[in-house]
Length: 379
Figure (cartoon, rainbow, N blue to C red):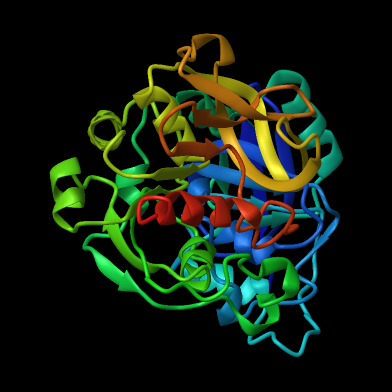
């Protein structure tokens, strides 16, 4: 039997709905995602650690949950909100319902609230702290808890989601994803380059793409030093996505600084932000962030507009970048930096997810660009 649940924000707003998933109480920064599909990939994306995610699409859960679309071993988000939960999914790939999965994983869900009003509030006032609870339904108490809950800014969430030990990754893309749009342009490689992927909270579809591109992939924790990375004798270094504020991650910035100029480097999302800091740039927090599978990005070199999957709340300040770094991509919703590249070194990053999952495949070419930069060493 479903119970009442409340979501309270630090500004004093309270939303009352019906609970699903687990029971209890949890705190986090309340953010929204505009994707129409892909809720499973969103829930299992480690980048959402420390956040309560609100889906703007009205019905969620209609195609259930399956083991093939997981992006990590467990969810890291702090809560999940939607307008209407489908409790009886219908899909030949489904092995269970969203409600059952969240209950097993200890994640509290809330449905039946006015998500349009909630999202509008976040857009106007900005992302803010909140608390979701099935055990404390007193508005005044919850508002006070939301006001006093820990801030995402300045906190290191990477250590909560990164792997404990290095590992080899061999899994390729799912057969359903092995389409012409995802085919590497290089074809079979004569030499299989070794890529060391530094994992700050990496989505699994990233190493799948690297393997699909012909690379051998070794995953190492986000705290790995430059000396430890170079001891593996990699041909290239990948910097993964991950949660939260990049600025407290001094250990990661130090490692990247010491790797620049030694190996080709490609960073995605948090990986690009850390790369920007290592190159001398500055980071600032966005008002409500970019989260969805429909973010338009301008490729300044080709003039093409790519529809991209994004999930971040911070961005690189273009004015802070040194002369040797150029901006390669721009988010067309607000003209924020979506891609950077060093002008003379094989070092680049993007502020979105070319591996998609879920989302469009417009930016698949970036994995080929990374492989090209690696292969250029052997020419």
